[in-house]
Amino acid sequence: MRDEEILDILKKAGALLEGHFQLSSGLHSNRYFQMAKVFQYPEYGKILVEELIKKIPEDIKNKIDTIVSPAMGGVIIGYEISRQLKKRNIFTERENGKMTLRRGFNLKEGENVLIAEDVITTGGSVKEVIDLIKNEYKVNILGVVSLVNRANEDPNFDTKYFYLIKVNAKTYKPEECPMCKDLKKYGPAIKPGSRYLK
Image 1 (tube, helix red, strand yellow):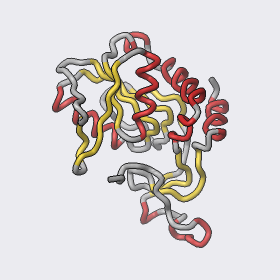
Image 2: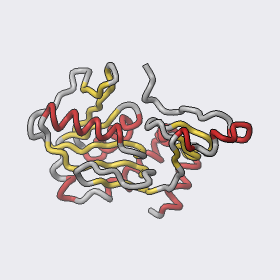
Image 3: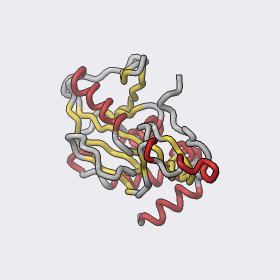
Image 4: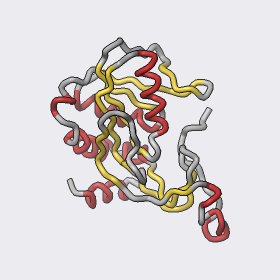
């Protein structure tokens, strides 16, 4: 599948937004990916995840025991990957600001885990998941996957990283954001993400 076809699906689903946004990382950007909108349409989610799975080498796919995703963005993609690969699926959540496993989810020492996220900018949520499951549960992390890589430089996860599409989107520290300097034109940054939901 070509990048143009992938972007066409994202646009059709209303998942690629243009404007003035505050990302979960705290950075500001002119583009925002609201991937939940893609998964409103099961046929789009199925196609994009099928294409993403093709990027994962067979030797890694064959070893996966469990897919782990950070809530909220990674939950649906993690489920769809696990459905297509017929693997177990769980997700992490923040409790009192700290990433944790809740709802009776657990991991066994030595379990082979693939981490799934919808969009990666700085990789902060994924790094929190890695710290949690590697340090507290002693699992074997096979890699990280995301539908969209919008990082200026690929994050260092100390494991393999596979993604469906790389999209250049400008990001700025809030104090350096040109859109913040012209609020008449752009308006204040909006926060469509879920990180700070209680």
